[in-house]
Amino acid sequence: MGRRSPLGNPSVLLLVLTCVIIFCCPFNVVEGVIGVSWGRQTSHRLIPSMVVDLLLQNGIRHLKVFSVSDNVLEAFAGGQIAITVTLPNEALKHIVNTGVASYWLQQKIRKHQMKNINITSLHVGSQPFSRFYRTETYDNAVDTLKIIQKALRSNGYENIMATTPHFTDVLMPGIKKPSEADFRPDLKEKMVEFVRVLNDTNAPFVMDIFPIHFVAENKWDIEFAFLDNKSNFSIEDNGHVYTNVFEFVYDSFVTAIAKAGVPNLKVMVGQIGWPTDGYPGANVANAERFFREFISFVKSTKGTPLRPGISIDVYIHSLVDENLSRISLGAFQRHWGVYTSNGEPKYKIDFSGAHWDIYPTTAKGVVLMPKRWCVFNGDKTNLAKVENQVRRACAEADCTSLLPGGSCSHLTFEQNVSYAFNRYFQMNSQYSSNGSSCDFEKLATVVAVDPSVGTCKFPVEILAAERAETDGLTKSRAGERLQGSFRSAIVLSLLLILLLRLI
Image 1 (tube, one colour):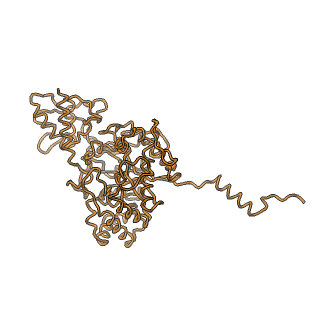
Image 2 (cartoon, helix red, strand yellow):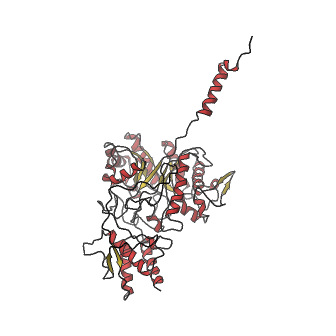
Image 3 (cartoon, rainbow, N blue to C red):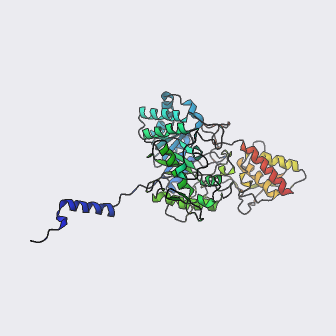
C-alpha cells in the first residue's frame, strides 16, 4: 500500500492554504490620505469654484478650511472632496451647552450636507493650548469638544468626526529622544482628559508640525528636517534610529499619548508645510525636496519606528500663500503655499507620491490685472519722505520678502523702495478711491517693464472676484490668522535695511 501524502490530511491542507494566502496575498494597509489646507487670508484670492477645479485636477480629495463660509462650501456641492471645517478658537467660549452647539452644527454643517457637500470632520479650535505665537490660550477647548461631540451624537451626525489639532509646543521642550516625550507639566491634566475624550469617541489625535522650525528651534542640522537626510546626524533611542524630524516628532506624540493612558490612539497630521520665503532655508528648492520624499513616505505606509507599517493621514499646509496672515513668528508665515495667490505653482510636487517630476496643475480662469508696476522714481532729495512712504506701503501691503533671508533681501536701496511701492499698488488693485495708488507724494511712477530682479519677483495681482473678509475671525489681538503686532517690527526692520543700503 502506497504512502499517503500529508496533503491528504485536511488539517495539514488547511495550514498550507493559510500560509499561501498570507505570503502570496498579503493584507494591504490602506495608504494615508494626502489632503491640503486652504487659508483665505489674502487681499486678492481665487474664487472657490477655481479651487475646486484645481484640487480635482491634481487628484486631491481632502481639504481643510479654517472657517465656515457659505460661498466657499457651496462651491463643493457634489461631494467629490471630503471637507474638514474649523470652529475658530474665538468661538469656543460661545459653545456653552449642547443647545448652542446643535444650532451651530445645523447652520454650519447640516444645511451644507443637505446640499450634497461632503463635510466629514470638524476641528474644534486650532492649537488652543499653544503659546508659541500668542499669549492667549483657550483653556475651555476640552469642555467645548465634549459639548460638540455630545451634540453630534444626539443630533445624528454619525459620519462627522470631531477633534482638535495641537502644535508641537504642547510637548515638553528640549526632549532629546522620543522616549523622553511627555505633555508639558502645566498641560498634562488637560491633555490626559483630552486624549481620553478622543479615545471614547474613536477620534484621532491631530498634530501640527513645521519641520524647518522644529529643527531650527532645537539647533539641529537642517538636513534632519528632510526625509532623505544627507548628513550623518541621527538620533538613537532604545534601538530605534531616527534620521528625520517627522518620525522623531510623530513618535514623541505617540509616547506622550501612551503616557496619558491611551497607547493605541490614532495620530494624524493636521498641518505640515515648508515655507518658500522669509526664513533661513525657506526656499522653493527645499520645499520641493521635502515634499518629494515626504509624500512618497506617506503613500508607502512605512510608518515610524514606534508604529511601523501604519498609514498616516496628513494635510499639507497650505494651498496658497496668504499675504494677510498673521506674522508673529516671522515673515515665513505668509509663504506656506504650494501656489502663489494667483494660482501659479511655485515648485514641482506630485500628490500621488509616485515621484513624477511634474508641476501641479495651474489654476484655470485666473485673470491678471494689467502688466504694470509701480516703482520708485529715484528722487532721494528728501529721505525722510521716502522713509515715511515706505512705512505707509509696508504697513498695509506684504513686504516680508525684503527681510533677511527673504527672496528679495539682496536688493539695492532703490529696488527696496520700488518693491514696497509695487506691493501696495498691487494690493490696492492698481487703483485707489483717493486717486492713483502709485503716487507716494510724487516719489513713484508706473512702468510697463517688469522690474523683477533674479529670485525677487515683483508680482502683478489677480483680478479677483472677492476681497478678503474675516469669515468669523477677528482683527483683534486674539485674531488667529490675521495680521499681528509683528507688522510694526517688520516696518522698522525694513527702514533700517533701507538706511544701511543707502549708506
